Image (cartoon, rainbow, N blue to C red; front, side, top):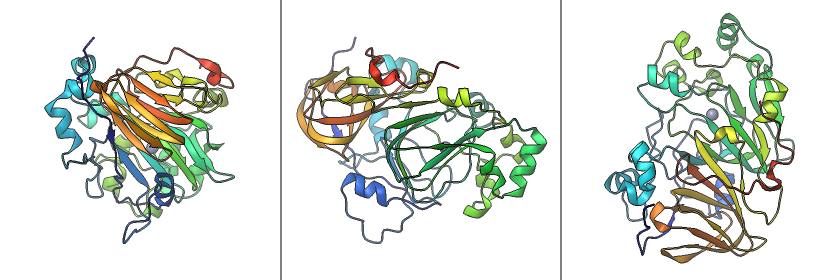
Length: 364
Ligand SMILES: [Zn+2]
């Protein structure tokens, strides 16, 4: 095991909200406790956290800059083992393997899907597809998300639905009511949409490959909608279903079921090849988490985050902290809840299954 470097610090992450084609962003500002910047255009629905990924289109922004001005991607390339740990670097080089976002759906997002690793390797020259997951931290009453076709579609039926560009596409998906505390895993290939009024911490493979099944009403060009591929080929990446009620249940869990439970998993085990999400809950006493490159989003309370090799950092709800591997083990104290997102390799899984498995579905 690599020894963490003495003096290594925790890194607070500032707002990083590239302009997008859909509305949102006010909930991100409110969550982070920030005033709206001058000229806020209401089209800043995503805060890209510890990002080494660029938007596929729309100007190609998205990269995280550290407070000193350097791009995180450059810092990782310069000293990958310091940031990511040698075990991660041996497997993945300087690629963190994860992208984390705050996402505020100011309007319903278009129905879209993301290719899996096999499709991305074959057609997009990339080792990552995009499995993603949502940890709901705020939702208006009645808020909903949509995931997977309820009934199996033939290629022709999918093609016709997409060509029509009307409400039937959304109506063909499973509708899922959500509230704060819900967690949903979205496997690559599954069509999905997030409804208006939902703020999530989103974990994903580090790409921006989206097949925009619904695009006309959002003013997206076909070139953007189909990832620069022929429509027929792009549609081959879509899971035509069905996503059964039982399968849907297996993709859902709750992240906040046990106040003060310490460290608990926040996603179904099926997420583990892609990323890891844990709840660090110190409302019942301080918790200590293993060293690992990770993004911590504080979602409740105020207290301190200490690293074995760094000075304590006061933390409060709305704050986002990047922990380098070299910072060492983390200790969260005070009545605080943080969601911790890590690459698949960086942190051993939480061994305390805790009550967070209550209400979770049986395996698929
Ligand atoms: Zn998506």
